[in-house]
Each structure stands twice: as structure tokens, then as C-alpha cells.
Image (cartoon, rainbow, N blue to C red; front, side):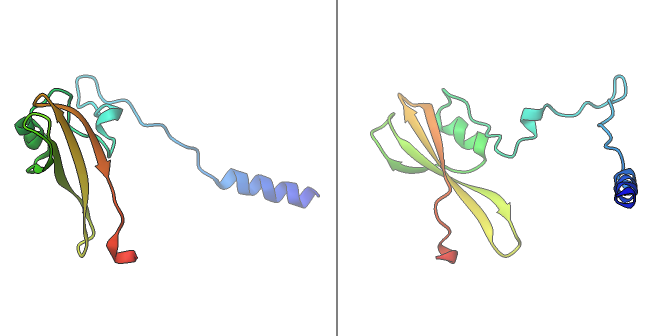
Length: 114
């Protein structure tokens, strides 16, 4: 029993303590806010027109359907991937009265693994 307690104490003592991130120097470069470090940070805002949305996404918008001013557009976003297979996600944008009213990501199914 004593040997098990000693072994457990030795194992527990071998782990290093966790260190918190240090504060930046006064007047120095500050780290970005948490929300800017998220991988799903989309530069869209409600009320944009189609041109502003295309510039914000950095990709052209493809018309899907709808009357003028009430359209649905599709944007293919290249989000990287490996050197052999690039991953492109589809993003549907809904416009009402010519302004962005909503968007929805569509990750679909990977045709390669079916």
C-alpha cells in the first residue's frame, strides 16, 4: 500500500505546472479579441447589398433564384484543405429589398467518400 502511494506521489510530482499566458507589455501589441480568433468568423453584416457582401467574402456571388431585390445568391468559399484536396464550402445569402437578410452555410456531403 505504501509503495503504491509513493509511486502515485512520484508520478503526480513529475507533471509540470500549467502556466497562464502573460500580459502584454504596457503600450505593446495586444492580442486580438477572442471573437476575432474564431475559425467561423464571417465578415458579413445584415443590411449589406450584394456588392458589399461579395467584397467582404472575397468571392463572386452566383445567382440561385428570386425576383430582383429578393434574390438568393451562392458563394463558394475556399477554406483551405490539404495540398491535394481543397475544401470549398457553400454559403447561401438571402437578400430582401436588395439588402442582406440572412445567410446559411451548407457543408453538403463529400462525394469522394460515398
